[in-house]
Length: 360
Image (tube, rainbow, N blue to C red; front, side, top):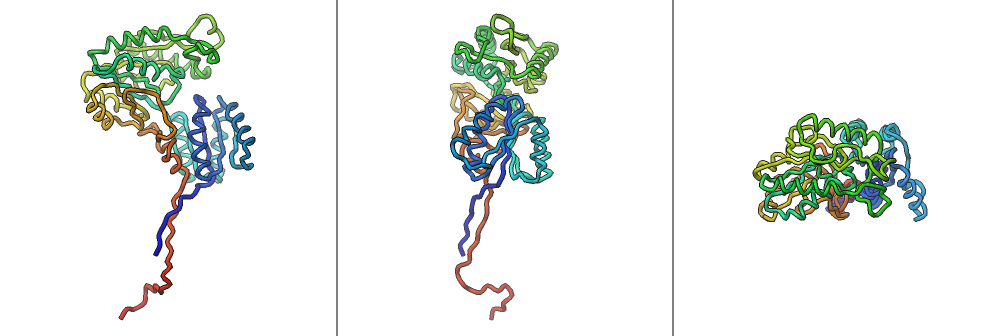
């Protein structure tokens, strides 16, 4: 008897991407989907479709057969039509938790497997034995890179009390020097909010944080000045003395807003870090290897960076815990998301195997 397994493509995969990083998010999905042997239908965000359409032209020039890679544009109704078409075998979605729930529910009705890469409220944790020069840079990059519009943004900065004041002081000083402007200008360090609804949402959450008792250390309003007249610019914003129960520490802002939370002990840091519905990414800054290993084990997140932040690898699996989604992108794990396993058993003995034969 010879028993073996085959990995086979699922069929047609729908890839739904978000507006914040349309091409890199697409690469996470498209490469493994095609490598596994599937055909795909790409539905980019209605706020950022042009780059995907241009990329589709390159796919055509590369010689892909017609129908292997397809792009449809439009709002959520297009995605819903795809999910209810009865012709889809897999869905991979990157976006907000609210939309992710809707997609999971719709796919569930048709029993379509889903990969969800959703939001986060990621804790970036600085201990008092950390290299503060590196940790401050990591905290800045973690929240103000891409104007804070990344799912892995280190929007909650947990700082041990002995270095809390120093870290906050350094962060405020550097944030106030961030150069805002045209992203095509190489001197620009931070651009705009992606669209007007997002711009208004960020400002509203800043006001709610101020009214809830968080201390506004810097920023907090729309940015004004030369070259900023025609964009949704928001000042790099930092709140100090934030309690983890505040909305600014619990809800994803998706903007350049940092909440700094003090803590005393390692156990308290883990408790605060895990006191969230999300579990996408996290950071730990310490010179103590044993502490780093304990934090890696204790933090509930799909990614843990140690003495770095917001660094990615195409070979490493990426995906969240809890309400940050399920399934993995990148690396070998991503291929498994687009494959199904078939078991094959071959009897080559040529013996009769009558289960009802009487043995004497």
